[in-house]
Length: 588
Image 1 (cartoon, helix red, strand yellow):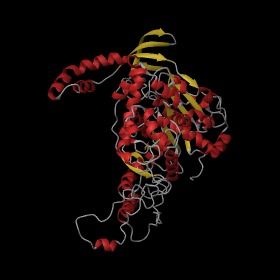
Image 2 (cartoon, one colour):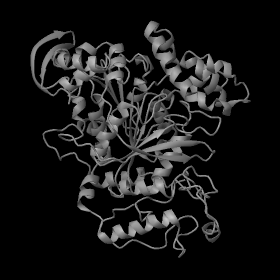
Image 3 (spheres, helix red, strand yellow):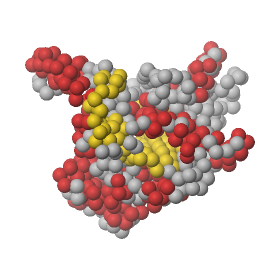
Image 4 (cartoon, helix red, strand yellow):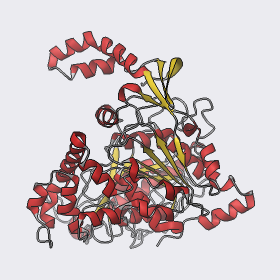
């Protein structure tokens, strides 16, 4: 429970901004304050001190967080058709940015908020997805019940239902019948133990069909709610053992049935049994056409990142089918080929989007990326142009020009060194268990990896070598999304903080965004005066709740889902024709 603003008192102008005091119901609950105090001490002593000081700390924290610094947003966009309508559909961006004054410093907002932001408990089911080149990424699907919240997830607390996704309405109105449940149970049994009646084809295509129903509820391509087989990108997991490999079949069942012994004589097919059974129960709660949202974390991050989980939870409340995309080797994902991820490599996200489009062809696909994930996402959008299967996207704290961001880190004094070393340490930790895969590669030197003290050092030792760049500077130049953003032809919301110490202000391509006038080039840049890197301690959930942009980003995705950018400047007939033209291309 974080602060909810009730009133404003004593406003003092400070240039274009102002400092205000806000009364709040609870800035830091006494229980949370007691826990924070108790963490500083051991066992019973900590408990006793926490019981005494918890309330005091909560009161002090409430007063500290109640002081806010107001500043205006800077919006940059072209006069392309639909941009004005999109902004009107995002009232969150019409308000001033109310930064917690105590965390207004860019380093305080970056570091303190990163450490203390609330960590939502989300249970994932992991899908290991084999790429065409033999590498693997992981998709983490949230399978626990959606955490409820007061008011609308888009931030409109006065009219709770006005912006809620149509997917939720469909979900609440269509429930599986008892006959369907029996059919699903039988399907899962077949997936686990096989079907002796040969109703399942060689590639897992069911010849039998579930009972007819007026509203589609289960996965359109899979009667148990899971479209196709899973585990292999582009093949739906055919012949896959979760990771797409062969050799998992039982073979001659009678032969194996006659063998006794306490040990297992076959490898369980995680893709066709365990994973499919668990995902079926989750995916069946959403209609076939529920919007799909892919979440892409920052450097060395993944589904465990706090900011990602906050947005995931918000989108799930809006009826989106959410999945966290983990790059190769991140978030405990397997690394099976001598190739890490990079800022320039878009092959994996392209394959994942293609796969999701194949599974749910009637759904609209969206993506959200943070930091390095935002750069990869923007590169992907620019490369795909008008053929992109995503309907819209959000990029936050994008390091548009990697050379400028690298210069800022190297010349950023003490804090620049702190950020760079922290990121390099995380990357070395991810790389170390897999370093044997890279032995023998041309120009690869394991000693350089071990000695890497900065992001640049690591990219010199690993990234540029494995991706074939002659130098780090060339890698950064070729990977910077500022050079390709003008080719983006899907609605894109970009949110940056002017004081970001990592994705620095000088790297943002404002002129390119301002000149994107072509139809379909609905890119909108929102810049806040403060916020640090992925901090954004402002709004009703400050200081340590969801980042401030989340409400506006959700409003943007909902507006795109509803076609606001098409209706804003065209008649209904013309908008429908454009929708048909802008529909994603068939799966490749």
